[in-house]
Image (cartoon, rainbow, N blue to C red; front, side, top):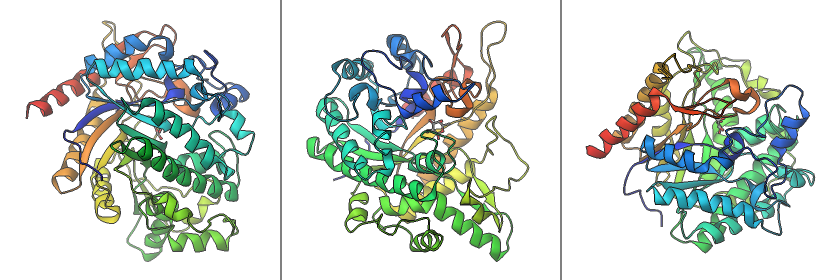
Amino acid sequence: MAIRQNHFAWGVGTSAYQIEGAWDTDGKSPSIWDTMAHTLPMSDTGDIACDHYHRLDEDLDLLSEVGVNAYHFSAAWTRVLPSGVGEPNARGLAFYDRLVDGLLERDIEPWLTLYHWDLPQVLQDRGGWANRDSVEWFTEYASLMAEHFSDRVTHWMTINEPWVIAVLGHLEGLFAPGISDWQTTLAAGHHLLMAHGSATRAIKERSPDAQVGLSLDCRPAEPASNSSADAAATHHFDGFRNRWFFDPVFGKGYPTDMVAAYASKGRLDPTLIQPGDENLIGTPIDFCGINYYTSVRIAAGSEEMDEAEGPVGIDPPNDYTEMGWLVDPDALERFLLRVHYEWSPESIIVTENGASYSTGPDETGAVHDLRRIEYLDSHIMATMRARERGAPVDGYFVWSFLDNLEWRAGYSQRFGIVWVDHNTQQRILKDSAYWYRDRIAQDSAD
Ligand code: FCB
């Protein structure tokens, strides 16, 4: 039975590959991101990243200074099961023991994501997520983690952003494992969702009181004009980007308009979705994590551009972050309400929200990142408006705690509320960190 949080979770988030470094330390094996970063010329790598693996205590103290009551991080599958399956690595588990225990000592709830994109390379060599066996591999990993940590970890996210993994990794080829093929994309997406359902069951079997969910990325879309053609294109885009994942996770099965569209273009292997699969994917969850950054405007004609790269957004002239993403807090409010009305999870958590601005230290060493404060303030207000209007929103996590490796964009994009000098590893709390600390304190006092 799902339970609403008894308090609002105020947190920050990170992921293993983006901050840990120590890519081949203490028995860790390479992940698909290690492979990609080592293969592409001129690419920033996560070999050292924020060196969090070696600076754990310092980083835990910084979390306390920011005053969060929750921390959302991911475990590297390659640290705890270097062969993907089979023999666990005690040294890998020990690192997460220190992290979890260090959080609890500081009264910070650990929110553990099992998969934030770093598949063991050994499993990619066996076909990765496109192989149906990946459901079993992931369940074995989830079971091990639940067995080991559920005495201390009560909040679990299975998969982070299945759309990104499927489409950017297997259609656009931009993210690991760098594949460009429609059938592989839909196979990977399907197995990721099945793996989510199966892992949810595995965690619940071992820890019935655990709160289990996943983080779905969303991209709210509006038609570029009032024309019916733009409305139809927007509906198609929404199917490709949002409904294909939300509908089955909430037990509605895949959207039939998209199944027909994909099948008619030969993108969907007719044997992929087997009886019982959608039932597994729809395994009830305790909360739905929403990762929100931006929204898009869709014009007719662009819905077919998902052939290669996803439909083109026609952005209105407005405010953009340094990722080139439109700042649109109202779309977050509307999407949270939509999640409540259309898919009705027991509880909703904003598991990622934040902005990239490169503002650095001034001559006194202070970081006056005013634009990030404005972004966070407007999006927290949007979250609270959705909550007041009835959406069961029980938590908000800023992305990100530290400036870190922004995947293919490398270290140039800075999402942190803590500045990291990537040469010296010095950390400085930005003004946004102090602002967030005060915002949390104000909420606790209310
Ligand atoms: C999300 C990812 C996260 C980070 C932010 C900016 O899609 O989950 O790791 O890269 O975007």
